[in-house]
Image (cartoon, rainbow, N blue to C red):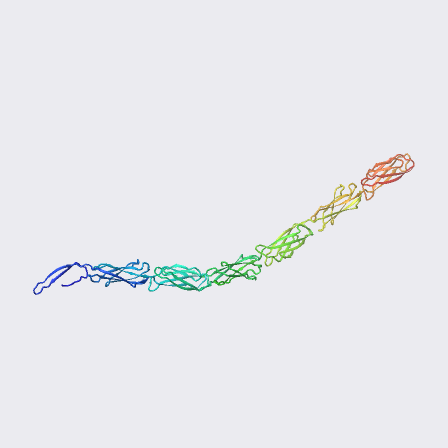
Amino acid sequence: VVTHAYSGTSGSPFVITGAYGGDANFTASSGGDTQTVGKAATSTAVVSSPDPTVVGQLTTVTASVASVAPGAGAPSGTVTFDFGDGSPTLTAPVSDGLAVVTHAYSGTSGSPFVITGAYGGDANFTASSGHDTHTVGKGATTTAVASSPDPTVVGQPTTLTASVASATPGAAVPTGTVTFTFGDGTGSTTTTLTDGIATVTHTYATRSGSPFPITATYNGDSGFTTSSGSDTQTVGKAATTTDLVSSPDPSVAGQAVTLTATVSAVAPGAGTPTGTVTFSFGDGTSATTTPLSNGTATVTHTFNGASVSPYAVTAIYNGDGNFTSSSGSDTQTVGKVATTTALVSSPDPSVAGQAVTLTATVASTVPGAGTPTGTVTFGFGDGTSAGTATLSGGVATVTHTYSSRSGSPFALTATYNGDATFSASTGTDTQTLSKNVSTTTVTSTPDPSASGGTVTIRVTVSSPAGTPTGTVTFSFGDGTGTATGTLSGGVATVTHTYTTTTGSPFTITATYGGDAGFTGSTGSDTQTVTRSATSTTVVSTPNPSGTGDRVTVTATVVPVAPGTGTPTGTVTLAIPGRSPQSVPLVGGQASASFNPLPKGLHLVTANYNGDVSFAPSTGTTSQQVV
């Protein structure tokens, strides 16, 4: 009898042969049988160590595979492990009844996890499986935070990096978010981890509080606990540049100029500087300080002269808590102010010999301002020398007298000669000279006059501006024609004989017709004309006469000087004893015949009875009759 254990099923059923070898008495012989050998049952036990673990911590999972009696032997093959967390299975070979793998759980969700070890069997052993549970807790973490660059300046971006790592014995890469606080009072920022790294960029708008405490707080996830890290960020003042421009440029004296200073942060700094800018104008006036608004400061300045143009203008930014000071410069070109010259004359029109005031008003033109100084040269347009006057309050005056109106209207000019600040300009006007007013005065001599007498009429034409020339037309008022006299030294004379008293006193009118320089004028006078005295002479013929003779009496009437002319009217001729006879004058004579007269000496009378122009008169003679 023997005992045998089959170590495998390969070849089953096995043929068993018993061979007797014989002895001294017996011959050898053999016999046979078959033995069927099946797979032995197995059992699989699973354990993990350490247990519990934390996320990322390796645990060793061991599957022990053993044959179940009556089977014996050492199973071979592989065990497939399922860790219960959804991760891929792992297969490990069985060696000496053991299969070993390691596994790190990446999270706690599902803990405790059921670990399954499935023995797949081999040619001699059947499959089996075993289970275990494994508890996984959250892993501890560490958070480190750093900023770069550090230090920075105001407005310069800095990158904050938080590195979150699992703490031993944990492993794996934490996920989730990190919350950053910047220490400057701004809101926190939360960002997502990528491969355990979270970054944000932050710009410090002020250095007040520097160095700033930075905190990065890892908010944990399903597998890792929270943690935090800190750092400090030093922030310095940002450098600045100051740009200065002036407008308009060029300008003119008196024109308002706007100076604009723009203060900017210099990279890597950023932001809008605050504070004040001090402006200097380069013209000796006081500097002006004005606050920035949105990085810009402006002032308005008026340059009152052009003598030292261009002016050096500067803007100095005085800095603030976050930005350093800086300065900028520019030049402002200031030119002379254009001017206008307005010229007026008064009185206008004037007359020759009358003083005329010429007034020039010199003003700055927009955009310039101020009151021009210096001199103005006046041209009078009549060929006389120019006159120069000094401006006072922008006004210059001269007085000029025109001696003649020849050339009127005269072209007037006023030329402003400019000064250091104001440019020259010219104004024009015209001066009209009217004719001078004349006065005509009429006198007549003798006045009264006798009819037929010569009257001298004298006309004086005068003016304060000189002596008129030309002619005067005389009207005598007696219906006779006019007469014309030529002025000499302002005087014209004519003679006239009034032949009647009808209409006396007569109005004498003298009309001056004017000349190039004087207006016409009219004067009048009255001339009283009385009857001219007369002388009457009488003669009788024949004388002596005889008693039988017819006697003719003739009266001759003549004017007595200064009277002239031929009297008209009637003469009464009378001889005593005879009827008087009224006889009309013809050619100054009147005749009548008387009947024979007795002897003796007779008085003959001739009475002129007068007319409108001649006064009565009487003449006598003696008639001798023999």
